[in-house]
Image 1 (cartoon, rainbow, N blue to C red):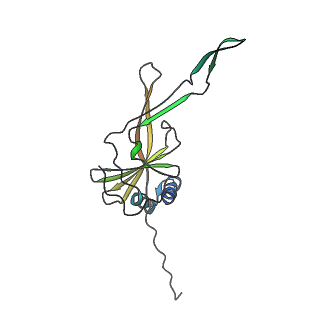
Image 2: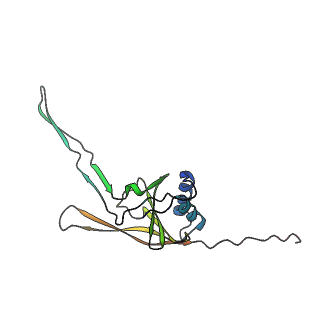
Image 3: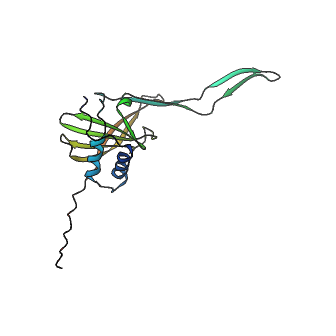
Length: 181
């Protein structure tokens, strides 16, 4: 469900700075103007109805061969090979260290924020800004992971979820200056 593109061009530096302030600013509140800036500039790419991803590691592999004067040799790579796939990769826009995705659903809008270099299984490496249909920020949520092992196998399934985190800061009152004081 893609909407019209935002009227403001996508300025990656401005969006990255706004997201930095949203994430690393106050612990319980965020500046609603920063949230509006992110929503106004983020391109509207269609996102999948249901998202899924897979990530894992496997051993680095090995090479066998024959060396003159030595005989059969086997060289093993000590490093693990990592892989990751996410069904919504094409829906993300990059700004600084952040991947951002606009989601429009049932009269609400959301912006999902994820650190580019984070491990998907790490807690707290993602956030979501929730908006009303007209773009007014309502709250921020932080990603929490629930994981369980498939029976006795080495496979661990991680199911992400969201929990409330920050609320919009109240607007500051403009101080009036009395010129006669």
